[in-house]
Length: 148
Picture: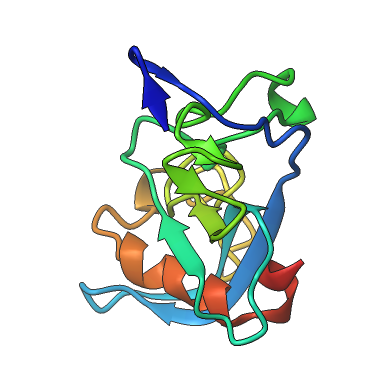
C-alpha cells in the first residue's frame, strides 16, 4: 500500500544471491552457449501448486537485487524495496517473487568476463551481443532450488 507517496509494509530483511545454470542454451540469433549462469533472489513462499510465482527482471542498468538487504552489496536496499515485501504492492505475503539477473550483467550472471568453456578464456569482445534474456530467466521458476 502507498500512503502519501511512501510505501507501507514489512521489510524482507536479509536476502541472498542464488544462481541457476542452463546447459546448451540457444540464443535467438542461433548462437549456442554451452553453459550460462543466471543470478537471482527469491522473496516469499511458493504455494504448493506453484501458482503464486511472479518473475521480475530488470533493465540493463540494475542487478537482480530488487528487495531486502543483501550482504553482497553492503546491505543496501534493492531497487524496488519500497514495492516488494509483506503488505507492499508486490505482496510477498501472497506472492513468491523471483528476481532474475540477465545474461551479460556483471552482477553474477554469465558475461564478457566469464570463461568461455570452448576456449578456456574469457569471452571478452566475443560475448554474444544479442541475448534472449526473458527466455533464459523462465527456467528458474521450474527448478527445485528456486522454491526455497
